[in-house]
Length: 573
Image (cartoon, rainbow, N blue to C red; front, side, top):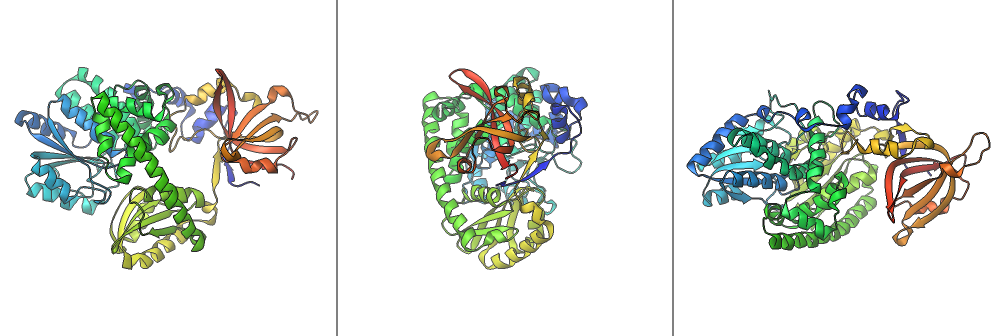
C-alpha cells in the first residue's frame, strides 16, 4: 500500500548537500552563504522600504507635537506581534499609544468602529499593522475625521482599493519599490520599519533594542508561512527567522518567558516547529475564539505576575480552540462525505454555527486531507464569510478575482484568502469557481505527493550529514525539510507505540547484494507517526522502500539518529 505519489528531483550531482541546494534553486557556489548567513550582509536596507522617509518625518513630528498614535492591527500571530513591536518602539521614543485590534466578527481590515474609537482616545495618527492595503474608503473616513493614516501591510495589492488618502504606504510590493524582499510578513514589515525609524531618529546604538524584538518578527514570518528559500530576493526572511530563533532562545520578553513555562517549551530547543505548533497557536487562539487583546498584552507586558496570568489564560483558550476545532472538523468532513464534495476539484463547505476563527484552520486541514483547494464558510444572516486554502499551482486570489461579481469583498495570498458573499449568490459562485478549478487543476494535481530530494545510501546517514542538514534550517515554504529515499530495505523489527498504538516503530537494514543478508552495522531506527496501521501489513524480513526525513532522538542522555517515516511501499509483493 503506497498512499502518495513519489516525485524525485532530477539527479544533478553525487554530492548530497549540493543536490539539496539545487533542488531549492540555490547555486551550490552560494553554499556557504546559504548555510552560514550573515545578519548585516544578508538583510535588506530598511531605507529602501517604500515611503519610509515620509514615515520618519511623521514620527519626528509626532514626538515634537507630543501626539498620541493609534495602532490598528490584525488579530492573528502576524498582526499582534507586529503591533507589539511598534508599541515597544513608541515606548522607547516616549510616544503615547492606543491599540485597536478588531474582533473576528468585525472582520479583517480597517473599520469605522476602530477608527472612531482611536479618534475618541485622542489619536491624531493611525499606523496599521498587517492590514489596510485595500481599505481606501476607511482611510478616507479617517482623513475626514482629521486623522492621518500610515498603512503598513504585505497582502496582495488591489489597485482599485489602494488607500490614496494615506500619508504613507509601507508595502514591499508597491509599484516601483526598490526593496529587494517582496515576501515579508506584516509583522516583519513593522520590524523593518521600526529598525529604520530607530536608526534615523536615535542612531546606530539604539538598534540593539530592535534586535531584541526579532523574536516577535520571527514568530510572524513563521506563522504567516512566508517564503524562506534563501534565494536573493528572499534570503532576508531566512536570516530574520534564523537570528530570531536565537533571540527566542534567550528572549527578554517577559510574556514569552511565561508562555514557555506554561507550554513546557525548552528555550534551548526552539525551532520553526516550536513557533508554528506551540507558540503561534497560543498567540492565535484568543483572536480565533473572541478577541486578540490578551495576546497583545502578553507580548508587551513588563510585569511577571500579569504575564503569568495572561499566559495561563492563553493556554486555556488554546485548549478550548482545539476542542472546537475537532468538533467542527468532524462536521465539515461529514458534509464532504455525504455530499460527495471530494469528487469536485474544489471543495466548498458551509456551516451555520461555526466559529469565524476556526474556519481557516478547517479549510487547511480539509485541503491537506483531500489535496484540493477548499473554502469553508460560516453563515452569518444572509452573508457567508469564508476562508480559503489552496494547493500549489492554483492561485486562489486569481480565481476569486474572476468571480468578483458575486463577492462582497475578498483579499489574501495565492495560497490563502478570506472572502464574503451573499448567501443567495453561493450556487452561482460555486459553479463559476468550480469551472475555473476544472480548467486549471489537472487530475494528477489532486493526488497527494511527496517531493523527494534524493535517494541515499544508508552508510551516508550519520551525524556529520545531520549536522549539515541542521544548517538548512529554518525550514518553510521554498525550503522544506530534506526528504530522502532508500530502496530495498529489510524489516528487522516492527511494532506499534504510543496511545492506541497509533505510531509505527521499526528497525530496517541494508540488504547485501552479495549475500542477500543484512548486517547489524547498517541497522536504522524508524518512527512513523500516525502510521500504526502498517503494523499488520509488515513482517520481519519484508523488503520495503521508505521515504523519510532524518531526525535526532535523545533518550536517557544518549543521542542517536532516527528516520521519520513519511511513506513506504512493499517491494515485490
